[in-house]
Amino acid sequence: MRRSASKKSSQPTSVNSITSSATDLFRSASSKASSKEMERIDNLFYQYANRSSNMIDPEGVEELCSDLEVSHTDIRILMLAWKMKAEKQGYFTLEEWRRGLKALRADTLSKMKKALPELEKEVRRPSNFADFYAYAFRYCLTEEKQKSIDIETICQLLDIVLGSTFRAQVDYFVEYLKIQNDYKVINMDQWMGFYRFCNEISFPDMTNYNPELAWPLILDNFVEWMREKQA
Image (tube, rainbow, N blue to C red; front, side, top):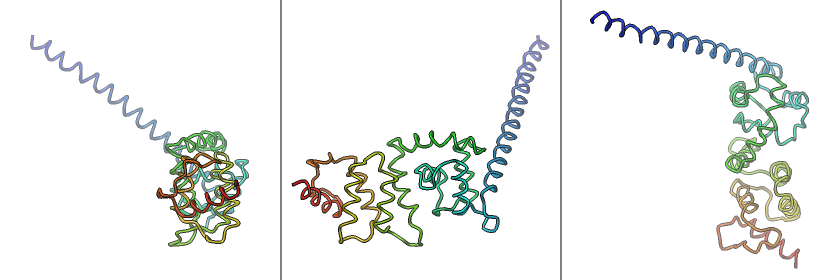
């Protein structure tokens, strides 16, 4: 009796050891694969990086865009920066590059090309887009302690970021921004306010726009200008 008991207890141990050695094998194989992937991501980075600054600078970004066959003003390049959580406009650090490409599962140029349409779908989901829209504004703050962006840049940014979704609203707002004289710059509150306006206000009639609600003053002025235009 005692012997069969010992047989019984020794059996799970061998099964356990097989399972754990299989797990170990799988772990080491997957860590080898991920270190190979990281190596390829790093190699790709150094293809475009400036050796002296150890960053991909505007020249490197231009070269990357050319290899990806997209314009440097293409919204997907901004989406790529968002995915990397890049902090400085026109520059990617190795850490940012790794973060973005690992998330995109892209360790080669051709995989990056294939990842761009998927990235665009991801960003355009409403749950992500508001974050991307806010990021686009922060990304354009190029000076330290800068809080606002000049009208000309804002007009270009609105066109790139919101133009394809809210064409009419963007066209009219850009026209208004170019002719008005009250504002030389736009801050984050006004920028986010316009996004909310596009999502909540029926356009072009704007019947549900209530200036008593907490809208930035620039939007009250814009609506007033639109109503005069329509009268």
